[in-house]
Amino acid sequence: MEIGESVVQSVILHQIGNRLREEPLILADQCFSLTNSISNLILGGYLRGIVSSKNQYILSHESNIALNDVAHHTSAFFSKKISFVELSKNLASHLYTSTHHPNIAAGDLFVIQFENLKIDDKYSPAIGIYKSESKQQYISAHTDGGTRKLEVSSGINPELIDKGVLIIENSKTIYAIDRLSSRTKYWIDDFLKAKQLPDEKTKSAVAIGLVEKVRENIENPAARHKFCDEVAALCVDRDEILSSEIKEVSEKYVPLNIWNTELNRIIERKGLVNHEEMSIPTKNFNAKLKKALSRIDLGHDITLAIPKNLSFKSVDFTINGQTVKIDVTLETGNG
Image (cartoon, rainbow, N blue to C red):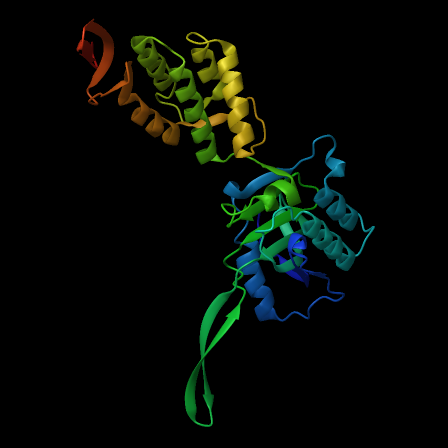
């Protein structure tokens, strides 16, 4: 996507209270007049600040995507069935009814119409929706009757997005961000009903989670270490590996349902789009895998840290009353 030629067409602001605290929803009827300086601030903050691979999601619904409220309202606008002001009011009302927790903060909702986003040599319009739940304090200086004075004022910083989403016409991929998600998750889960498209970091984290779960279910410590060695061997001289390749290795050691069950659990917990096949960049994945390989569970709640130049071969326990004797065999890299 290229946003260098993008322009801000319209901006409107609604005030969103918390309905559970009986705070009002105040809807505006008119858009703001725009200056070049305001447009440049919006483009530099609200547009550039949200377009990133780590912020890619898709809108979803339990039964039919057409029943997703945000998708329904924006589609009606892009097809010219409703005006921009009507679209903004519909989105604000939907956000207001999506407030299901008394701790959700009130705030200002900006709805912005962008034009000329360039995607694959085609220019497309887009709708940006941004909720500001926190205001920044600024110090400004001015001269009053020859006396220099400092004043403190508060305002919204477009370069610090609290909650936002960018929806582009004819694109399934949206860009969403929730800087305050640790407090409440309603923006992504309830308002947008969106699932994240995993970026490289997320793919590596999912793959490592799967490897660790499979390893936990391998009883024999030597087999456990051999499994990790086989997975590590997949990464040699390669930039990417496929999740199906790791899955194939795991099937030698554990039942198939362990992989599938853990994959579904991670996908659900992280709110990700369910991809049965993922291409995993080996750089991040291999670094995490090496860390996992450096420690091995010997059993009996005993973990061994293994030096880089050695690999685990076997372990024997001899238990005699209150005495436990452990014989660990390691080997060098060349055997």
